[in-house]
Image (cartoon, rainbow, N blue to C red; front, side, top):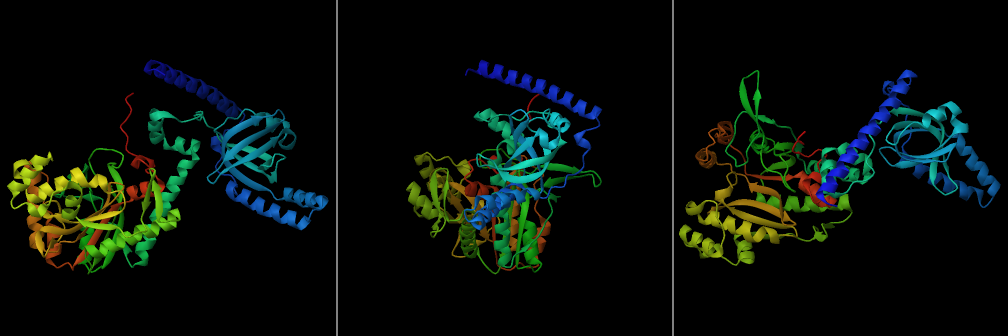
Length: 525
């Protein structure tokens, strides 16, 4: 279909929606005239849900068949007695089969769909006439008993049915194509109605979060909450969102991490803390980035980055088994094995393995820059690039895309690790690691820097770099430095994005698929 034909079809569809909405509004007006406005109903006595009703009936039916032992008359008597067990369900009409004086509708609640048999002789002629004016999408309450139709479908035989809410807009018949995918993100409420499988992703997201909390709680971690609004723009590379506090007449910043407050708590004497925190970064959007996302950060006193490596590897393996039933999962057609020992490589080893260059061969920064130029690797820092900068550039260019199976890359250059402790054996590197799955960085961890003098110097370099780029708001977090001056024990810290973990365990290609309401550019009107 051409773009012109697509546009014409879309315009026609919009016109159809307006016509149908007008008809439904007229039906609503009729109800109001008859003093039957469904929006005035405040509750309905729901006492059962569709999934449990169907499961319970199957179980009870099997019991009755066994009890009857082939006696058809006895079985019919037992089934007849089931008609006295009245239930009340509520949900949305999803389909309708009109057979004259008897109709079948599908009603979907939060658990499942169930067929409802509505018969004029059962609910009354006047009520049936009103019922026939309702629409697909309307929300109804049904009183009746469960039975199995002659075609074998477990259904509810309605004794009465009431309109609880009028749907003024028609449900879309189907979703397809990229434009419709965009609408699904913008109107998640419609997506959840029409595509019930989408709900499974978010049920699993909730389960994953419960399992993460359970795992950390069982290790003795304490869950805490720290401020979302900060008075300082610290020197980290991520750009914050800026807001304004009217009463204080003060610009404030939405947090870009939870790290510094959590480490203050380690200073204060908590030995294991974690936070499930909403994070805000004023950056672009793609399949793995959203400006607001959920991170989980944890800090443990008296351990280091090796301890955090062991923790995250075991956590992912445990959660995969509980959520997916196996530590071998399939993501985008690729089998990912989280059960095996994760490969662990230093950044130097990884670059040597995948790029064929050895950091240890570079005697000077100039030599490192020359190798980068020879290999066609761009280094953001240009002529100011150090050996560490060049190593990072090689990693980005050659290594990350190769890390499909769970892999830990550790010992990062100090140039891009302002909060990690230097390696005692080689101060050009830090005790930091990131772990990768399906060529995607999934989390970040350090042996935390607890030297207040070194920390201040690194903060000051960060701030100077940001101010050189024109950002005069960047500031050293003096209170955090003060906290370190009181003494922070050796500490291991780790943070990871919950959304990327959910993507992995639900086989979702885009972060938007695992966010109920992803950030979207407004539609021009």
